[in-house]
Length: 299
Image 1 (cartoon, rainbow, N blue to C red):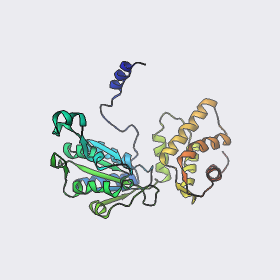
Image 2 (image 1 turned 180 degrees about the vertical axis):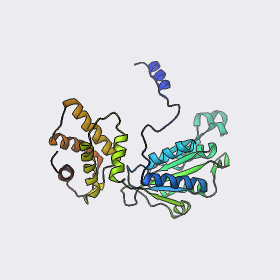
Image 3 (image 1 turned 60 degrees about the vertical axis):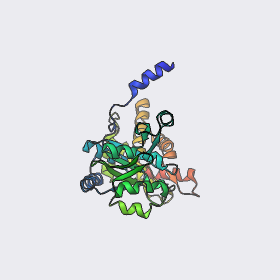
Image 4 (image 1 turned 135 degrees about the vertical axis):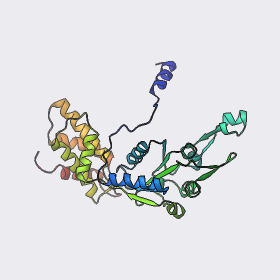
């Protein structure tokens, strides 16, 4: 394929308007979280979605933004995230020609939402260093931020930030600075949803799959075992359950039926990377224990 073909297809592939591609189930804890986000936004109080990976923190934030009909930008933090990734920086080529003018400045997602008025979602905030976390202090306290060589800007009245963080004991997390914690006023805990709600979420995310309830129940049994095991550090997420259901369906669609061994092999391939065991645990032995426990009983 030529470069011309690539750039032509690239133009046609650009997303005109970002919308959620996955269905959202607003029940139980998610209904309560959405209501708390609405109250926080109305009161201009910064909320924090707190919970393990795969519990729907990102999707509830995006759903809230769509419901509010406001612009939405997000960034997933890690230890390599620097303040300029949030705030922005000058384009060297333009700055060389024109100097440090406003049109040479390339805004980061935080600055973009502060100027345009919208929601900035700080995902996995406690994976950033305290140095980077502190970039958010002025925007949250004073609703302003200083841009070097440009000056201090005041946030649009519709600017709103939602933060999300993993449990503090999860590997790769940093302590949230006390100054930042003091500026986060609404703490919203999310955990793995109730069985009935999670099964509804899995079904909603596989509309093309005609999987009967027996296999859906087996899928949930498998992921539930990982959350109850003392050997597992990072259990299976809702996404893992969706992946299991899709792979089981493809196997059935291809072969007409599957047996217990097929289920075990599918579960092994998905859970191998879908869960993380604690240090010192024999992963191979532990994963088969999880699978046998989750699939216990006659079909």
